[in-house]
Every structure is written in C-alpha cells, then in structure tokens.
Image (cartoon, rainbow, N blue to C red; front, side, top):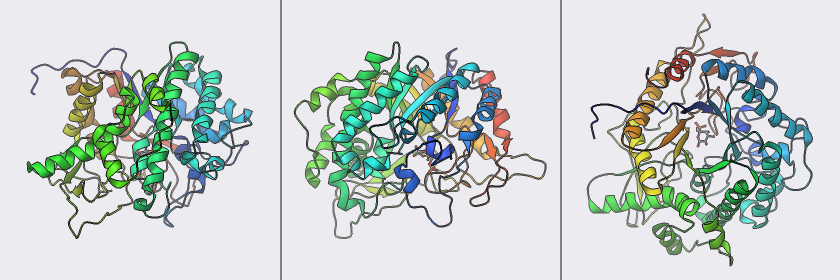
Length: 470
Ligand code: BGP
C-alpha cells in the first residue's frame, strides 16, 4: 500500500528506549540483592559476565539526566526480582525497593514515564533450585512479587510489562544461557514452564487492574513476521506452523485466554503438552492485557521440513535465528535481506507487516519495546562515536512505524534497544546498542564514563520533531 500522505505520530507518542536490570545495572551482589539465574549463567570465555555491566546502579542519576537531554518521554527498564525479594519468596529487601523507588522518582522529576518490566530473564536462583518455572509454586511466587511491586510503585507507575520474551525463553533458552543440554530433551518441561508463566501472567494482569488505579499492563514477547522460503504450499504451511509456535501461542493465550490450535497440535505430536489444572483456562480467560508490547529485531524465514532422514535440529545458540523443528519447519536464509555484523537479517518492511499482523489479530494498542542494531562501535580520539549504521537502521524502522500508523495501526510508543550501552545476552559489551557509549571493554573496566554517540543527537532531534525529522 503506497500512501500519498503519511499520518503524523500522535502528539503524546511515547518516544524512549529500553534496558534490562542484569544487562545494565551491575552491583550484582550489593545491598542485599539475591542471585539470579543470569548472575550464575555460563558465559563464553571471551565475553564479560553481568557483574558490573554498565554500573547503572551507581550512575542512574547521570544516566537519567542523559535520557532527559535526549528528550525521552518514557524509559523501559526491568526490576530485578532478586533486589526486591532476594530468595524469590519471603523476606523483602528494603534497599532494593528503595533503589527502584529513587529511579522512578528521578524519571518523574524529568517527566519521563516509567515503563516497568517485572521480569526480564533473571529468575531468582533460589526458585530455579526448586525447579524454576516447571514448579507450579513459581506461579504464586511471581504473583506475590507482582503484588509487592504494585504496592510499592503503583502510585507512580502507569505502564507495566509482565514477562520479557517468554517465547524466546521457551524456544531459545540455550542462547539466553537459561538452559543446559539439548533443548530437544527438555521440551516437555519447557512447555510446562510456559503454561505456568501464562497462568502467572494472567493472574498478574488481573491483579494490576485491581490494585493500580488507571494502571495498564501488557505482555512483552518477541514477535516477528515469518516468511515462507517460496510460494510452494509446503513452505507456506511451514511458515504458518512456525508463526503459530513462535508468535501466536503466546499472544493468543495472553489476549484470548486460549491455546492456539496449531501450536497445541505441535505439542501433542511431540508428546509435550503441559498439565493444565482445573481452573487454569478460566484464569487465562479472566486476565486481560490493555495493550501489547513487543520486541522486533529481524524477520525469519522457513521452508517445509517433513521429517526426511537427514532432518536434524540445529540449535544455533542465537535467539534470533530459527532452530529447525523436524516435521514442522526448517530454517531458511532470506537472500533478499542484508544482515548485521552479528548475522541478524535487517527487515524494516517486515517490521511494518509485523505491526499490522499483531494489530489486526488482537485489535489492541501496540508499543515497541525493543528494536535496534548491535554493532562494534569505535570511540574516536576526539571523543565521538560515529554510529551512522545505527542511525540508518533506526531511521528505516521508525519510518515503517509511521507507515503502519498510516495503515491504521494504533501504536502509542517506540522504545528501542538500548538507551545506553549494556552487556548483550551472550555476546558481551562490545556488541553495542546504546545511544550513549559506556567506556569499558570486555574485561577492562576503564573509567565507565558516558559519551554521547552521533545517534544520541540524531534521536534527540527525532523526538523533538515528533518523528517528522528522521
Ligand atoms: C532480546 C532481549 C534483550 C537483548 C536483545 C538483544 O532478546 O530481550 O535482553 O539482549 O535481545 O540481543 P543480544 O543481547 O543477544 O544482542
């Protein structure tokens, strides 16, 4: 669809950017914080762990001031469950509660709307040792944690996100460092864990509406358009399979309160259907989100795979690359797209398609909570970082948001990854995403000073002009 005239971004559009606790904060064991699965996860030898990260914990005021200088209307950050309740259940940690309370106040002081992710991969280790999400008790632990957050911050936080990229945790737990061994062997447990997360999430949707006056809450999966490798009906069917298993399983449960039929039949076929307790489906139906937040980096392509002798899962160790599922779909390299330095396909038009697909399926307002380019940035001698490639990526994607808005999609915010440089999930600090450079290397912490990249000034102008000047 070619529009003669584009609609403007809404006046109150939430421009901002995102981070997550374990990737940006550091202070991994300070002020009473308990250990999370991310703190203890395995790291490849050549990249840093999350112990110091960008040391945002000790520099949050300076960081928020820089976000304000860029003109942020919102800042998406996650709360580390282990700062609030170190063991996952039981005693609260006042110092952790105070940290986020101060961060929220600092944001509000600068008129920045806090957009809070309650759980971004970092499950308390104490809960993991009791079976993690496979253990039904974790549902109650999460609801209890959510209640603490609503009690402490509900007076100041209007926008809440439950679980970051639940679908990536289930499909790519290995890449995220959340899983050991071959995911083929642990799929049954994963889909049980998935069911528990869905139940917990719906309960928390409901709780938010009861406890937070005017509060709005939504899920935050990673959603992307899936292309068939060709117009061969088998390839189209494979794309349909993968869309159901990767995307709609999660959002259908969150919004419609039911399991997607194709995804369910996939689980049946593999003998990995979860145990559903009496009352669970009623819980899924009762809890409803107010909006859908989603992350988008790349589209994906698949071809038909009908279980031939050579079919074999190829777990890639990367959360944005399709792992084969023999009999259902097989990864296909899309030659129409360029890739980032890290091999992720760049597809702004696919972003527009994705926005349209989600909106037409669920008819709920959308906010983009991650989108961005991981690259090796270079700090020049004159203290500049000339990240034109990042500007190019973001410009093209923001343009597609405007096109989608013109198509009639209701989008109320854009919060790319990431506000400031932080540690990638499995590829270290030198895979950078931020508008603000943090002066450290993988193992040399240097002085951690903050330096505005070229993209900082560019994004400042995008926000200032409400998206008119890209
Ligand atoms: C998403 C996660 C983020 C972030 C991002 C970039 O899957 O929600 O936490 O890590 O991907 O990925 P990476 O860090 O692997 O480059």
